[in-house]
Length: 447
Ligand SMILES: *Cc1c(COP(=O)(O)O)cnc(C)c1O
Image (cartoon, rainbow, N blue to C red; front, side, top):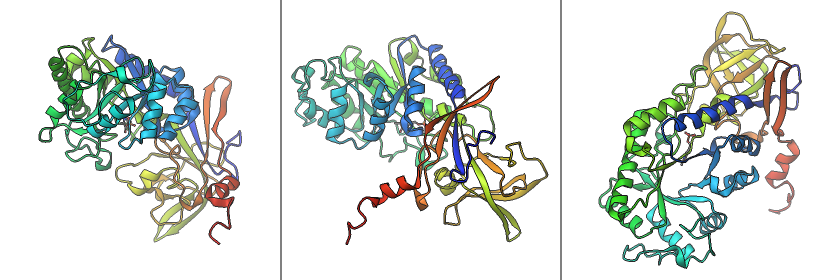
């Protein structure tokens, strides 16, 4: 408040805790160093915070990037993440995306056997028929020396759906019987087809699984990893060599949104995995991880000014500038995504006073645009500030353009004895930019 970050033109801002991100990155590295001596690539799931300076900060902490679209790939490259530290997942990669990833040496996890056929075709490493009668080789790669699969270029894997079942949030559970992701391992004949597909492609050296995001227990997540480890062992036994040398265990470590406590921790998860799947940690397998939410959620905050207050049906309501545009999931599915709200006065001091049940509403024009409903807080007044806590992942960074509300500015901060220093990560979107992005340069296009 003293430094004037919240203004009349920018009544909502997002803050990122630089030291907090560094600490979480270090905790992640240490957690896995303690359970395996094999190489581990931690690839941050870019969709959780698609901001170039954040990716660069993570890169400086030894964390690579997991990407799932041309935009996310470009962000990771713009952040200076080296291609060999980038992993491309996505259920709908185009030929152009695959070609570019293979050219650059970005690791690719194929989502289906169809996609393996497509990679065969693109690299000249197979016929693309997927019939399993031919032993593919990278020798005929059309990508030039060093760029074909298995020849020092892209590391290639196959995503497996171990079909272990759903967690608490259906929309984020990727290992259900009918999930759209990966090869459904328990379906009739699928296991045999996967083993065959791997044996036919000696350059296929990774298996990938990601069972879901938020709402999954550690034991369930470990079951998914166990299933994929057992498949890797089966493939390696059939190949008579360690063809699968790396298992990508995905992300999905749940975040505690109810308090400041980080629970579970990366160390809890790493130990759970080692206990459930000891063979994966005996040094024979490299690992890739793809954590998103658990690295960033606790290190972001949305601040918004209370513009007006009113009562309706005796319920006090604070009309703020933070709503569906920055907290989309919470607004549309409040039961699955409750957020803690902190209240501050006009000077930024924690608001005091008796707790009153009130709604914290956003600025968008639909009734459901509530950051929190029936929440007990000191009674808010115009000019106060509310903070939506734990919003560092999947919130302000994944703006929703409803009502043409501007993307808020994002500022990193470092606090030390000298005070708090802010640095802009993303400038607030201007009204002129909104017009330009909305066909403003061709108003007559439909006349
Ligand atoms: C979303 C996603 C992640 C990250 O999930 P978090 O819950 O944010 O850790 C990792 N891998 C894949 C394939 C994903 O789709």
